[in-house]
Amino acid sequence: MTEEWVQECLEKAGAYAATGVCDHCLGRAFAKKGTGLTDLKRGQILRAAMKEQGTDLAPQSPCPLCEDIFDLVPRFAQAVAAKVDTVESDNFLVGCRIDPETLKREKAYWEQYGLTDTAEPLKTELNREVGKVALPTINRAVEFVEPQVVACVDTRFADVTLDLAPVFIAGRYNKLSREIPQTMWPCRVCHGKGCPRCHGTGKMYLTSVQEIIGEPALEMTKGKEHFFHGMGREDIDACMLGSGRPFILEISNPQVRRIDLDELEKQANDSVLAQFHGLHFVPHRMVAIYKGSDPDKTYRARVSTDDKVNKERVDEVALSFKNVHLAQRTPQRVAHRRADLVRDRMIYWVKAENVEEESFDLVMKTQSGTYVKEFVSGDEGRTTPNFSAALGIQCTVEALDVLEIDFQETED
Image 1: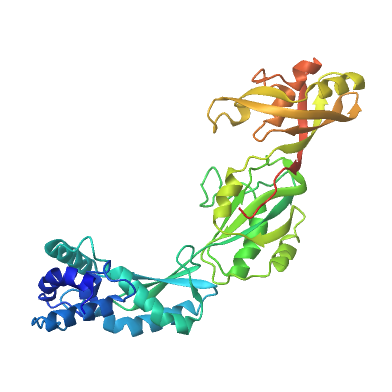
Image 2: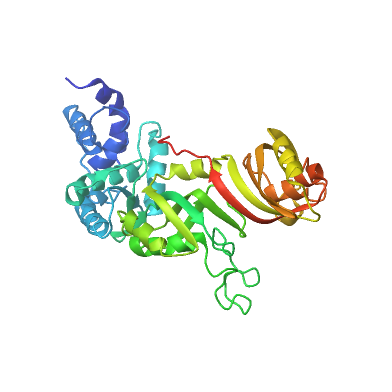
């Protein structure tokens, strides 16, 4: 007995088959009918049903729609397998680039014969069929959501190009120098081209935290570029101590994915300017989590004063800043690159250490985004309340260290 879906499709199928399309294209036009079938099998069933009813419509060769492109599937699959084998990955996905004229012709056919609601694109079927043939040779899993490698077949030339998903390596860093930035900083004069000001390097600074770990990672992965996603950043003249600042290093177009992270850590830690630890691979989605996190931070500021101070008074003022809200207008030093806003920030606690006649240390825990230097100095009244006003003596931060960043990475 003819299945119900076949009876539903026969009228349109007959008109469409009269164009001479192949079984692949005939079945694909009714892809949303009849479950558990390939487009080829669906087309064969429809053509056989029409023949039983006395309508014998043989396909033309070449097919007026796809030009018998499915005859080339073994060749495409072989090219895909050969290309994917040149790189390292746990999974792959096949994509195809089809002649735009063929796609226009397909769309016109759907509209002419009323098939828009039941058909699937030629590209979808071809991707699937090439992937099925290539899979046993490649011997890697197919991944539809986050493939590490997408092999794209240009069907006009049977040429395959690879789109390699980046590698993401998370960890923490300690910045031990007050003279390097977190990320590469292009020269302000030449914008990276090279000039006398930057001695031809194209950079404002000779190196950065990013480059110290990014360069060996690039070499190990045989990648193209590295990008650095830090969970915030400290000022160039500030050190990052304690357990370090969380970061994710992104390597684009990696030919090798499974690198030895212990070896990478060892190579990066040859530097005396920065140190790295806890390196581990993470998925792409973690970049947004790291960039979107705003953890509280603990700082140590070395403070100088315009006049002599009394230890008891410094201690008293420090202890008075417990769960205190600040109104911080954008500091003068960053006003050229930040919107002029007044931000509400919290000082959780402050304690004074190493108090001398005209200097002392302040250790404090603050809300993310607090301008610590301006909390101490007042920034000419742009931060209120502030430590200088409370003490009655103008204070200036001479050196700043980040001691801790409160962040616990989770699977989610």
